Every structure is written in structure tokens, then in C-alpha cells.
Amino acid sequence: MKAVTAEIITIGDEILYGQIVDTNSAWMGTELTKIGVKVKQITSISDNAVHIAQALDEAKTRADIILITGGLGPTKDDLTKHVLADYFHTSLKLHEPSLADIAAIFRVRGIELTELNRQQAFLPESCMPVRNALGTAPGMWFEQDGKVFVSMPGVPFEMKRMMTDLVLPQLKAYFKTPHIIHRVIQTVGLPESILAERLEAWETSLPEHLKLAYLPHLGGVRLRLTGQSMDEAALEQELQQEVDKLPDLIGKYIFAYGEVPLEEAIGRLLKERGLTVATAESCTGGFLAHKFTSIAGSSAYFTGGLVAYHNEVKIRELSIHPETLQQQGAVSEATVRAMAENVRQKFGTDIGLATSGIAGPDGGTPDKPVGTIWIAYADKYKTEAKLLNYNKNRLLNIEYTTMAVLNLLRQSLEPTVEE
Image 1 (tube, rainbow, N blue to C red):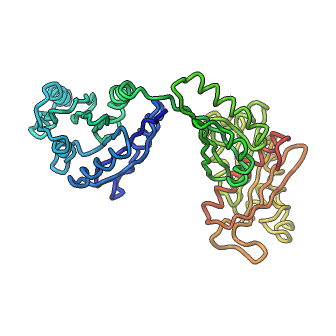
Image 2: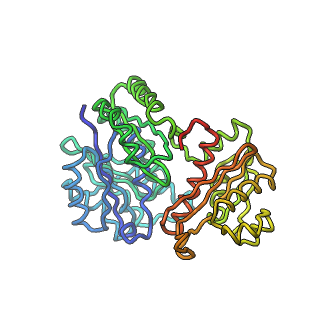
């Protein structure tokens, strides 16, 4: 089964200068996948006629569908329409329905239609106009040698409406695309290389039309299993059968299926068990509490947190013994264990979590270099502490520590999980 492929070309100096971020391509890639089209390449180019023509020549050698955004405004630097007319050896002609749409938009706004905006209704004769329901720049659909070229405005809300209402349905009908379905498995606690070793035999046995991708991120790896088939129901069943094999291989490291962050998966576990949690943070500076409160409904299980950055705050608010800080230091097992235990008592929660470390870039010593971090978990039955050594930059140390303490909580909620 031959895959239907697409290339996205974004036009605009403002993208290349970094003045705006190209969010259009990411959205388009997601939506194209839903209709069974694979994006092969995304290209950003300047508002230059030669560059645009060269990009079109190259794209049609790689893809079946070439989607173009940008350069359809009324000003002199908007060249796309004129370049497309030359490229497809045609001339511009007034398209009356488009002019009526543009005039209607100006009437609603109470603004007189300008000649520049009237010129936007002139379109290449050989194209099929694509109506813009929200703006003054119509889209254009061209067909050549079995390839489809579609030019759309760069304004995100205009492009998305045009794609959703008109372009995507027409592409699906034109190419009779297969179904592309993803299954996402979220893991934490194993690096990508070890995860790949454990899954090697399973991955090797996958059918040709099923592909596995490893997507590492802070503290974990997202596994994406992608299948392609004309039979949607059969593909769904086949993907599920393969996913069902994973718990026997890496079940102790799977925390969720689908696009679910670790903090949300943990929130679900806390809700199911009717448990509450509080945090005592030093080196993470409230980032752990932020992770909890970023999830809607977290007040059901997250009671509150304390940033005990200075030793005096540790003593006054968390009742850490001064002798412990003097003899063991703020970055020590004894201190972090006491922080977790005492914040649980202070907030009256089932669980207390704590972090204390040297995030950097300075503050380290030969015995405790930058990246030396202690984390702890405490409940009414036990207290557990772990030493981390990251040796990364300050922000990464904070983020990695937060993910580590969240995983420590997950492990404690699921006693069968390996450490």
C-alpha cells in the first residue's frame, strides 16, 4: 500500500527572522495524519519569487500534496499568488464569488473596500478557488501530473477553517487515503537505550505496516506505535493486540496510555485512593507544587506546599533541628527525610514530598558538587529518600528533580513497581 505524502511550505520573512513562530505546520501535520497523509518535509522560505518556485519544484519530487501558507496578503511583498500564476502558466482573472466575500467582510467591518483588497479576488484561471470564510485572501487548489498544490493564507485561524471545512475533505476524497492510527504509551524510569533493549524482540516482530518510535523527554520516554491500513477497524484491533503485550515486557515502567503527563496520571491514582499530598521544596523552588496545580481538579488531592529555601525557614516552618543542618547539611538524607515527614504533619496530609539539593551553577563543594540532590517520600508507614546526581544546568536540574520525585510518588502508590 503506497503512502500518500505531503510537504508543507511556509512563506514569510517574519518566520525566518524569528519574529513569529510557525504553529501552522504542527497543526497541519496533526490533521493530515488523521486523514492518512504522511508529512515528509516542512520547508520555510522567504518572500522571494525564485525561492518559491524552487521550493515547489523540489517539493513535487518528494510529495503527492504540496501545502503552501503565507504570502497572500494585499501588499507588494505578498508574492505567492503571482508566482503560482507564472508557475502554472496561467493568468490572473477576477473571481466574482471571492470579490463578493471580500466586499461582505468590509461591509460588516464598516470599512470601504480598497483597490488593494479588490485585487485579492483576482486568482489564477487554472486554479480551483478555495473559499476563505474568515478573511480576504482566498485559497487556491491546483492539480498537475497527479499532484495537488494548495495555497492558503498564513493567518492561523483563517488557514485552519479553510483546511477543516474544505481542503482536508477534498484531499481525502481525491487520494482515497488509508487510515493512520497512533497508540501512545507513556513510560518513566528507564532510559531510551535500555527500553529499546527490552522491546527489541517485540519491535522486530511487528508487521511491516506497524512502526514504533521512541520519543524521549525529561525523565521518561513516550512510545508511539503507528499503523496504516485501509481497514480502520482491523487496524484498531491489531494495534491494541500489540499494545496489550507491553505490560509483560515493561509494565512496571508504564504510567499511562495516550497523551497523559506524569503529574496527571499520578493525580488520577491519588483520587482513586482518596489520598492527599503536600510538598516541601528547597532546590525546586515550587516547581513540584506547580506540576500538581497545573492539573484541573488537583485541589482534590493536593493540599499545599512550602518553599523552604533558607535554612531558617526549614527550622521555623518545618521544625528541622538546627543540629541536623549543622552536622549533615541542608542537602542530606537526614534533612530531606525530616522535610517530607514534617510537611505531612504540618498540612495534615497522607503523603509528604520533599526536595533539597544544589541546582547550580554555583554552590557546590568537592563532597557535594552541583547536581547533588536528595528527594524524599513520607507516609504514615514509611519514609524513603533517594540521592540524585544530575550535573546539568540549573533549570534542567530543577525539572529532572521534579520528575524524579513524582516518579518516587508513583512507585510508592504502585508497590509492585521496580525501583
